[in-house]
Every structure is written in structure tokens, then in C-alpha cells.
Amino acid sequence: MRKFVGVFALAVMATEGCLWAQDVAFMGIVKGVAHHQSGPSTVVLGSDPFQFSAFIDMSGAGSVLGATMTPAGKSTTPLLADGESLDYSAAFSSKAALDAAFPNGNYTLAVTGKNDGVRSVTLELSADAYPPIPTLNQFAALQNVTAGDPLVVSWPGFTGGTVSDFIQLEVRRISGTGEETVFETAGPGEPGALNGTSASVTVPVGRLASGQSYVGRLLFARIVDLDESSYGQGVPAIGAYFRETTFPIVTGGMVDVDPPQLWVSSPSADDGPVSRQSAMAFQFSEPMQTVQSIQWTGVDGSRFTYRWSGDRRVLFCLYPEPLPPGTQISWQLNRNGFRDVAGNTLPFDPGSSFTTSIADTSGTPDIGMAGVYKSEGFTQSPTGIPERRSGGVATVPVPSPIQPPTTRFSKAR
Image (cartoon, rainbow, N blue to C red; front, side, top):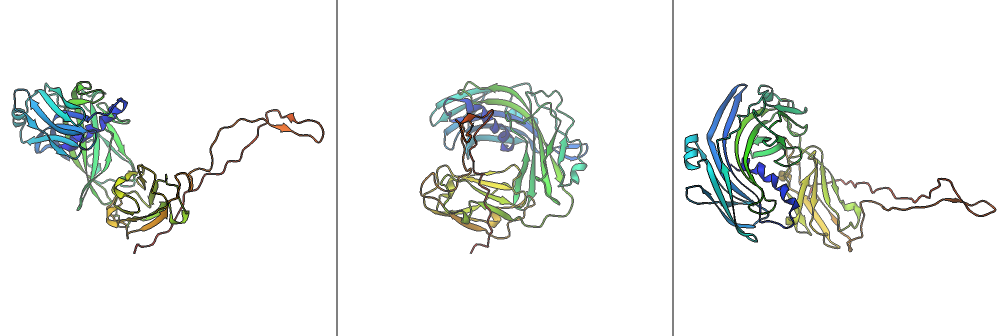
């Protein structure tokens, strides 16, 4: 159930304008139906397709101490903690069973926050306002996709859809080790999010590998209740109905069996003492899955935040404070923790090290110099006084930017 609820969690960007942090980032009540498309015009219900979920997304780990959900006229149900969220989900084989357990009407979410105390929001689900069933236009073409080309996925349209409605496409890779999301359109409120008037989206090159099987998921959602004030300023709560359809995607061509290579790391062992403000980066030979496993020494590896570049070839490792002074920091990549889009791992466990400077501001900077200045230019003749040049300016040499370092790697011993 959280696969649907999670798309709305991205709407927490609406809280960025708050003057203080709330314990809750987002909350909601949703009912929906899951479908599966197995042919150009064949769409069937999934297993236990009628679904209900009540959820609370925390603003941080442990910020919510507990939460409950109470349908009108029914008993209260606790929400269970799951990472940085709490939720209650249920699935049914029929709509009648869903409606008997969770009828349309008012639902009250009561939250006990670590700092906010006890607060509640009441949301309404009414009129069975389910969106139409999502279906794919080019189902047959999706069974033989060329991985090296952009993939356009289109649908007949969200009948009656408006800019207030929401659409999302997700593509997941299926392998023996599980599933991984390789592409997903933006969540509600994010730049580029699809609304109810959208009819297609393009999966960019580099997300799909040859000879692989994927599962697509197209979701239509209609928000029928939006409350952004009852809990606290900027914390959105929604009541919504959704339908989603899963479908297979198969890429043709030879299966990629070549392992990815680590091309560059920065900083490198040849850089000498580097700034304690340095960020670390690893560049690979091809697009990678957005997972990583790195063993660090000389620094607390659990404090790193990892970000992949848009083309998923570069991994940035960001530390929340200056690195320890005068310290040799070593790293080693776990070959099984880095995979290309086809699932191939690194051929070995590369590793290296670098040493930080003693002071925060020493070491190699990212640029040579920066500044703003005004000047006047004069000409000195052999005799007489200097004369101002017309349009003359003085110049100040600015060193060129430092080039990214490169290094070679050997198998870690």
C-alpha cells in the first residue's frame, strides 16, 4: 500500500515555508483499486485489489510518538510505525468488503508529536470519486523496447482529469535480488509533476538495460479533500481516491554482461593535503543503480549523505561538517554494493585514501580566486604627466580553475 502513499510524501516541500519545524510532514486517508494490463485491450483486477490506507509521514525519525485513525461511527485503530512513517493498510477482494470496513465519510487522524503534542485532523472521503482505469496505448511496443532509445509511454487520458488531479509513472527493474525503481515521475507539488491533463511521459536513455524485464505502474489519483491548516501551518492532509495499473516492459537486444568500471575518485591520493570542506565523488563508466556500499576509515561513515548525478554516473558523498583535521581517510567500494542498470557488479573492490589538511581553510580550493573590482587606466608618456586612457581598464590576472583530479586504481588488498 505504501507504494501509493509514498508518492504523496513528496509533497512535503509545501512545508518549506514554515517558520518552525512541525513533527508531521504529511498525512492522509486514501482508497484505491489496483489493476494489471496483460494485453493491448486486456486490463484485469489485481490480487486483493481494493485498498485502503491511513498514513502519517514524520518530519524526522522519532518526531511522532503515536497516531490513530477513527472512521465515523467505528472504533479507533492505531497506526504502526514503519521507518519515518506510521500507517495502517488493508486490502480486500471486493469493493463491498472495502466499503463495509472503511465506508465513505469522515476520518479523524489523531497524532501525538514529540514537540507538537496531541493534534487531530478530520478528512472526508465522499461520492466514490475514483478516477478512470489507467491503460497503455502502445502495450505491444512495450514488449520489445530498444534500451538505447528514449521510451515514450502514453495513455488515452484521464477522462475528466484536471490540473488538480495527479498522475505518476514508475518503472521498476525485476531481478533475482528483488526490485529497484529505475524511473519515477515527480510527486505532487514538485516541478514537473504530471497532472490530470497529461497523456504521456518519456523515460530517458540510460534507465533501461538490454535483455531485461521491468514492471511499469501508471497511477491516476483524484484528491477530494485537502486540509493545510488543521494540524499546523504548511502541513498538508489529503483525502483521495486512486486507481493504478501495472504492466510489463521488456527490452530486446543482447544482455549486458560487462561489469561497470570506477573511472575517477576525488579527492585522490595524489592531491596532497586537501581541504577539510571537500566533498567526495566517484565517477563510473556507465549509468548505475542508485545504491551504494562504502567502507570508510578515519571518518564516521554513517554520517555521509549520498547523491547520484542525473545521469547516474557520479556518486557524491557529502559530510555534514568539516572532515577531521590532519587525518588519512580511506575508502573501499564493496563490489556487490555497486551495480549497473543491468545488474552487473564492479569487477573488484577498489579502494584508495587521501589526507586532510590541518586547518579548515587550507588545502586545494575548487577555484583559484574570485572578486569584484573597479579601475581606471592611464598612459605615461616619456615626458609629461600620466593621461587617462579613453575606455581604459586595468586587468587583474585570475588563476584558472583547478581541474578535477584523476587517479588509477588497483585491487584492494
